[in-house]
Image (cartoon, rainbow, N blue to C red; front, side):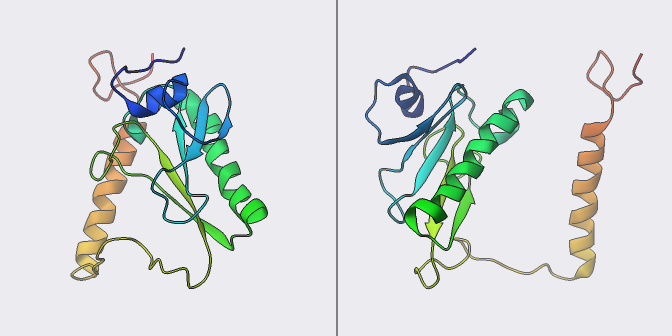
Length: 157
């Protein structure tokens, strides 16, 4: 079932009520050219179902959605002659449209883009880096634990 929001411009593209230069569409996904591309071919890939962030994407849509992201990235090289691609998404911060979308951008050597588009910094020291890694590991391990009926960790019965 596809759910849309009337106020969402990407939902309007999905519904065909907003103009877009479609690149690909299937039962789960729509891909179209970004109106303000970094380079010609810059494509946005959106799920047909309205979800705002990657963590909200239903697990049943992961494979069909990311297979399209993968296919669009491959097409950048074959169809556009790009040497590679940059694939990125924002979750809430810097997300200009609150509908999950991945940017797939064709890349070539010396194209003017420099790594990520924001300042980068090193960890203060190895202790800080190890602490951040441990915190994320613990959160991911906790997310994999079975949940009881109250939503907390529990045993599977």
